[in-house]
Structures are given as structure tokens and as C-alpha cells.
Amino acid sequence: MPYIENLEPFDIFRLSFGLVFTITSIIIGTLMIIKYFSVKQKNLILVGITWIGLSSPWLPDTINLILIALTEFYLPEIIYLTLTIALIPFPLCCWLAAFFDFLAIKRRNMILVIAVILSVLFEIFFFSLLILDYRAYIGTAYTNGEITIQSYTLFTQVYFIIVLSAFILTGLVFGFQAIKSGNAEVKMKGKFLVAAFIILLISTLTEIIIGDPILIVIILRGTGRTISGFLFYLGFILPKGLKKRLL
Image 1 (spheres, rainbow, N blue to C red):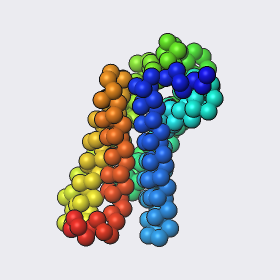
Image 2 (cartoon, rainbow, N blue to C red):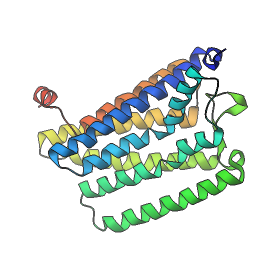
Image 3 (cartoon, rainbow, N blue to C red):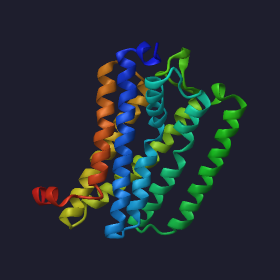
Image 4 (tube, one colour):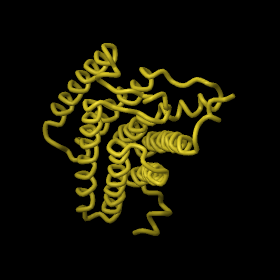
């Protein structure tokens, strides 16, 4: 009997929302990267990579849903944890590079180098703990054998919160700076960005802190993450048709 038939509707909803968010994030990020070739704004490549990379914590759920739909297997815990945690520093560095460039922050190269060094040190530390005893120091991908229940250690939870805070805080600063602009289009993009970061913050915090309490929370936060992706896109690329309606 295929493993997917053993899953509860609750589990399927959770995995499905991970699939939807991952796919839409890849599409949104790719469209932003492609847009670079017509407008020649290098930061579009960075923000495109950022949004694709930020979906990496949900990539294992996407892969698992496909695997259990076709087979009776799913990702080993070590691979699950690696995909969920180890990929995040790269998009964060891409975002910081774009953020520093957009706001023309002084000594941005030095700050970015420090961020890269810290990211490398984290990767070394993470993989050391992963090899040493990942269940004790990182967490478990399948708590009590349940494919949709993860249990992370305090170290991992703090890491997620620090990364999320860095991304959200810089994003809000950037968005509010854009809102202060005298240019109506830039101001509108800033509003989209602020909305995107706030919705993403709420959606992600509920996953880190609350876990999977009830189905309605799964639906709301999954929908919120996807909406934040579209708002993030509009914060950098405002389609002409929408621009005419809003401005």
C-alpha cells in the first residue's frame, strides 16, 4: 500500500502547502532573475536568489510529498535537516548584499564579508553537530516516526529566529525607506514590501513557535507565505497594468 494512503488529511495539507510555497517561490525568484536581462539591475538577481533560497526550509516537505506519492520512501533525517537548515545562509547573504547596495550603506563590503565569514563558521559548526549527534544538537525530522512532525533543539530554534529577524528587520527598513520616497511608484513598492515581510514574519513565527496545532492554522500560514511571495515580487517589479490602476 502506498505510504501516502497512511497519511491523515492534516498531514497532506501541511506537505501540500510546503509544495505550493516552494514551487511559487522558485517561479517568483526565477521571474525576478529573468527580469534582470531586460532592465539590467543586478540586484534583481540577488533578490530572486534570495526568495528561492528562503523556500529551502520547505523543500524537504516538497520532496517528501512527491516521494511518498510515488513510493514508500522519504528523505533520511540527515538529508532533511541539511536541506532545511544548511542552505539558508546563502540567500541571507544575497539579500544583505542587495540591501546594502540599495541603501548605499557605507562600508557595506566589510559588513558583507563579516556576514559571509559568520555564515561559513555556522556551516562548519552545523555539519560538525550533524555528524556528532544531530538528534541531540540539531533536532529530529520525524518525531515519533511521524513524517510531518519535526522537533528542533533550542540551538536550531534560535538560529531560525536570528536568520528570520535579520531578514525581516532589514526588509522592513528597506520597505519603510521606500515609502518615504517622493516617487509614487517607489512608495507603492515599499508598501508591498512592508506587507510581504510582516505576513512572512507572522506565518513563519507560528511555524517555529506553535508548530502544527490545528488545520486552520496550517491553511492560514501556508496561504500567508504564498501571498508574501507575490507581494515581495511586486515590491521590486510592478507590472504596467497594475501600476496604472494603483498610481
